[in-house]
Image 1 (cartoon, rainbow, N blue to C red):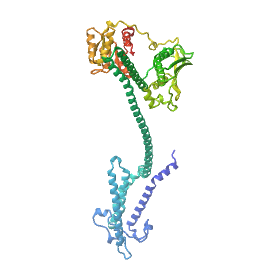
Image 2: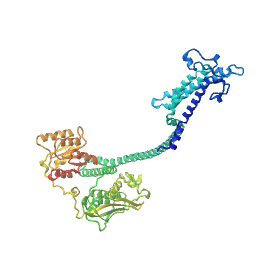
Image 3: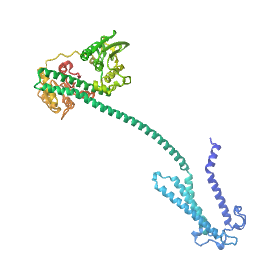
Image 4: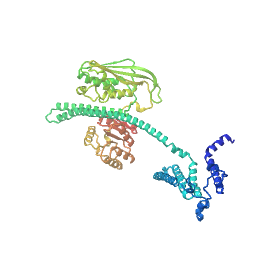
Length: 631
């Protein structure tokens, strides 16, 4: 519904100025019309109260502006008006030229200022890109300019030529630009708010600057921390390289030295035999060192794998103690074992990793103990029942605790946790005296944690240390599982391999001769080629002549064509012969690449030849043709 209150006020607010303007125009026209009708000699005009009774600026025929030119006289009311100089007289009746020129001069001065401002305004406007120009302010500049023309220029012209109609025409563009500008003042409001917006922008920039400075400060702090970590990592790398150089060179020195003794023609058979035994011992030590480094690398990258199979903790401990007893006796140390009752006969866990962890702990105790004894305690604590394996029935869970206590040098309290850091021993002097890489405890703690437990240490300097590892197992009694890969497989019977053809693809001459030697010892022959390209050609030639190989042994890193590419091409060519990868690569990613390419089995170097021949028998057994193996 129409509301008078809500409509009238906005209308008045919007149109009050035009209404006043129209009223003034009507009054002015009416007044001028009255004067032009000859009423200059009386006060009867409607606006006579504005200029008095003696105003006589028109119908002065002797001073008429009539020129006889219709176009010119039109602008002066057909010559009916006189110039303003005839109206501006002194008391004597003469034109007051002093004030006339004074007015003209000041009008010109103001006009000059207007022109300078407009020219500057226009140039600044045109210097902006079209999309960046403020048209609203330019409209205001035109209003500014036409006001000067209509006001000050017309004022000067009317001194000598009373062209009031020309002034009316000049008011038309002024009215146009004025109402064009007034039609939408919201854009101009933004210009009036420029100072406030500039202030807000400066405040925003200041805040952004402060935030940026804070971010830079944080980033700088993070960078300094990263720099410290990088420097620490660089020092650790340098220390690691120095220690690895020492640890690798030590067995290599023995290997090279005793190999030379064994090769010396003057050495007797006993000396040669002892020398080769020393070479083997140091080679095994070097291999264990490399395996430790690889284990740490796998731990750091999350690639270490665990199996869950039934095994006996008692048997694992017996194997470890039997293996470590020799080292203990060499240092005149006694090994004591105490196993509490309640330990299940068979449990489900990873026996290889448990053996590795216990071996590291006992070996560490022997290394840092010069006199006294080393005791191993084993306890089991029931944790209730839980399912073992997918779809399996609930079995009783146990927490196994194995503590290894020695009477060695002990560890200072402030260094207890640092002994678990990679490549770390308590003090530099300890490294020099006892050697070692400092990786064993790192690996052991990670194994314990991955198996659901932990590894902790208690120690007193000069008294000894006690390392306690815990891990979770499940009772394996009567365990049935569908995951046959987790159940120990009976080794396949060693087949008569003499009737089979074998191919070795290996670029290393020494390795080819080594493999050939072990095959000859078993009465077997094996053909060899130097790279993957020749291996591919040999297999395809044999296939074409129905002389297929029984097993292909393939190295990975070779010139011309590597083992993985060769394996992939053989599988694409339809070759189904088992392919066993023989390689020094041990990372899981490399194994995955081999199996994706089509490898049947994966064997790490150095090669355990008895296991290799067992694997060959398994692969040639029909029941194992489609299985993947990693040894």
